[in-house]
Image (cartoon, rainbow over all chains, first blue to last red; front, side, top):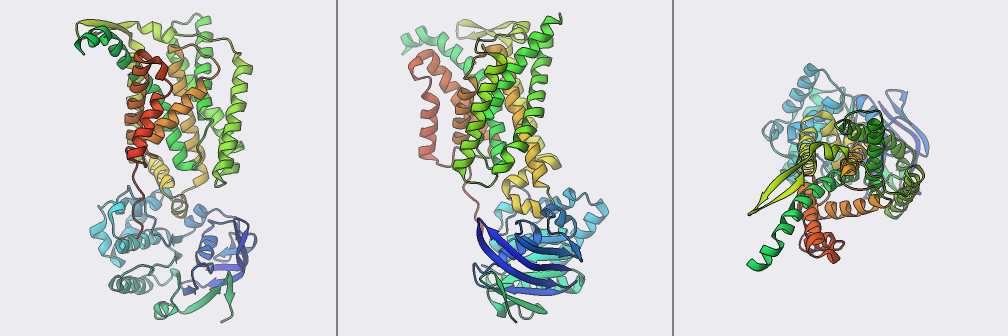
Length: 218
Length: 311
């Protein structure tokens, strides 16, 4: 589904990823584990097309997308929830979730179907829907960011350290939401980054470890 | 005090009317500058050039239409045409050829590049329009004057400055607020302003939004210049004066604030014109005194918000 082949990425002239090889199969649940600064976020941003790649290739569903800009990858069904939840603060929660559907010009039936799907998976979003995104707590914001990513990500979602900074009870709810997600939408691939490998063990089938910009041998 | 007011009352009235008209023009420029900064994250020094070229183009088109024997009211068409042409042609050219190369670069470099662009455009103006003052006030004359009652006196003031300038500014304010809130294109611009990467990940074509926003901001600056052209003689340097005042307005309001830009344009426009009438030696400093006073108390600007909490 998502493939990174021998990817090398520089940020401001400094090599951040070196020869990274990573494959997420269709419907697969994969963890990318590494310390702060190891290159987790850069890997996700590279997959999403938010950073230029110096060498290597990116494939989505076997198709080469290496030079494809981010918005076209979103249109291919890749959803992305950055580490900082990064919602559009002046919009309501509902507007945040509907924006991608409007931008991608989805038919209204398809938009309604996706929104229903997200509300079923994350029922708390229904109550939050009319609230302004800027006023949400950190945990609520993460849920909304996940919901928004799912509005786009019909084939895969990239979740950058979703558990970072979540209170234990919230982290548990978030993990349960991810389990429900896999049951409800088994075709949607999930790639999650995390610094603590124990946290994700029950949620994923495969784990990659990244150290100093390189995938460590398993 | 009563004595002083009796002597200076008319001047104050005139200063208020003048300040209102001037604030309307500065708002048009500042609001575009603000939008462009929000999306491009570049402080575009050349924004003032677009004001100046809009003014010159409006005067030239107006004079041309008059030479065809069209009635003075056709001058209003010249104003709109000038804004559309300058925004629609120069906007995309500048964004594509110059600004696109410096996105995300160091701020010093961005300032140098847009300042260089400003200098180049200054010379282009001199090349096309020369250095002799150009005067084309047909639209203003066509509307005549209105007697504005002020205390026991009346102040004759041009209907153009009294109604057209503030009217266009208010319509721009209301139109922009509606556009950014209620239309998809507007919400997309807000999304890119808030967080470009997150917006791109939602399927938004940031390059397209950037081009659109810059063109729109350029057209607003050009419209400001076009509207200003009947009220003044056009000479080299009007662009510089405008951009510097617009910076003061944007800094006072806080970045990303449209209603705030209107209020701070009003403060600075009124402050400046009161100085022009009552203490002309302070004309140049008053806008900055207002700005400094505001920023000392609220460094994020009058209406600017501090970053919302992330976690």
